[in-house]
Length: 140
Image (tube, rainbow, N blue to C red; front, side, top):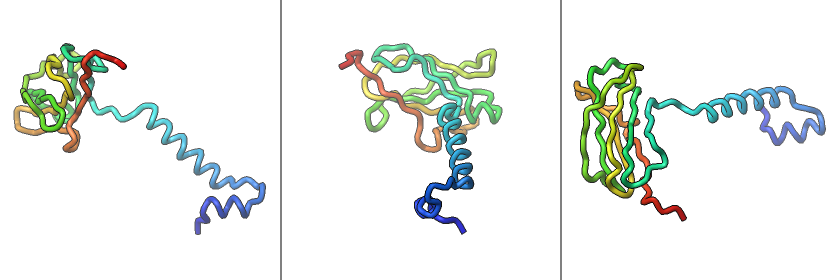
């Protein structure tokens, strides 16, 4: 039976609860390592932050690439809200196996995007897509 931490602390009355301390230390270390390294989704946008008018290089080495896609397309649009000016451009494979495309941040709001391959498979970040804020160049 596991005793809640508050009760254990009271029962210990100054004695160290080694089982709890080791468990906490282990969990904190795992959580901290995950937080510091973060998940690698295989997506990179440069530059960030994005300013209206910037030329954006989008790099992709995610799920479709890992599944052996022969062609990858960047499907993107601008917001806020529903995507506007939706476009799709073919991506080029670089020497390291990363696919890349360059587009212009031509509308204010948000730059939202996902990817598809030539077989009609999509990588849309589990239905959330990817999205970056585009600022107008004025920092307040």
